[in-house]
Image 1: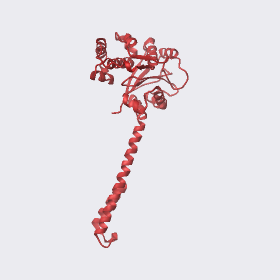
Image 2: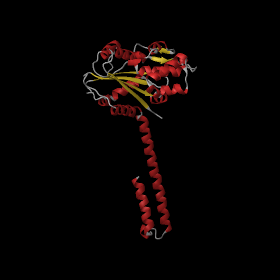
Image 3: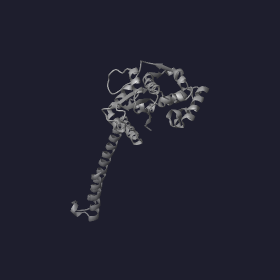
Image 4: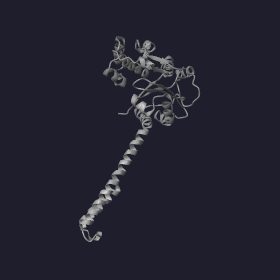
Length: 297
């Protein structure tokens, strides 16, 4: 089943280092692309297994990740790496509280870095990663971090397997983003980055208000954001479904009219004279009622 997954967290009065590291992780990790030869379906290492267990003890909600389900079904080196990466990305501001994760980020195998960074925002102006990291690190208000994820097959089918598609998705829905977070659109600031992981391609979205007093996100707001992005991503499929339903309805109407005309013709042939005035009242009323019913469809 096609599905969009949205995970939302926030940082308030977090250490400057945590916010800065999150921005740099988002920006530099976008260019990480798994090399085909690096996909390893041999059993997960002992170290990976221990890290997975440590993560689950640290945050049991990680069991709901699609990446964990993949690992649970097939505990390979690649699936373990996917799950550990996913946890780091969704909890980048607190990974320092879990021993072993930070070093694992730098040492995990099978990655190739391309380009300096992949951070994008509302305009096409060049983004200086260090300046953005400093800006976010010094922000005094709340900073929200969202991870919007798709299954690989959906991302490939719908064209969301590249950063440009995700960037334009946010730009088209920036008004809905501001409304969901209760931020005046003139104060809205956001940065995104696309991470093209093997099974669950996803976008990191960092959002805050330039006015530190603005901004609030409720469950209703999260649902509203998920709905806006999901409707946009799957709009072509929804249009195709609507078109199919319309075509089917029109075909059924046409077939119903044809059957009714056959029925009326049969009734006419069964009675004399051939004018409707000569029909038995009940048969005529029944035929006319069926015709009206079909015309209303």
